[in-house]
Length: 185
Image (tube, rainbow, N blue to C red):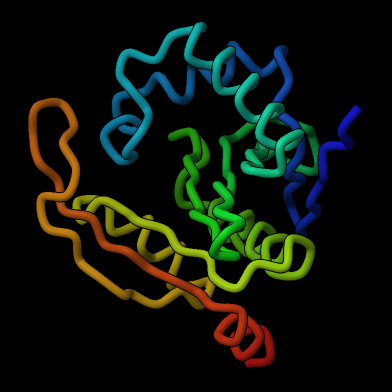
């Protein structure tokens, strides 16, 4: 049996997704605002989508290819969103992805969770680089990245298609050297 890692921050715990989370996952990921600000969350979001996501998260940890965490409030254990790293071991890098339910927006949870996950990626997984992309139409996601020391490294014009429209992505990065320098500052 694979032990699922846990990450503790000041207000949050990042840990395994569990099947009792399904109603909250569907409720939060199913909100149009969440689908509109992410690349991979469909609308409508169904129970089957949540179950697939949970199974994928556990399989990814077993294979050491993906570390997808539930974001929970430390004080109550309440589920607020998800965050993960999709690892590309041949390149010692990973892609960071995340979403937070609308009732929890603008409270700094994504920024705090990302800080914990970046630390996990560099210090526990030994990664050399972590990158992330966000929709140009979602500057709040870029703010989460910048607050964690990530720097813009590219603009991918009309790079993805969602709901029949093309979208431009902004890609940000953090190398291990940049991470260490950021942590010291």
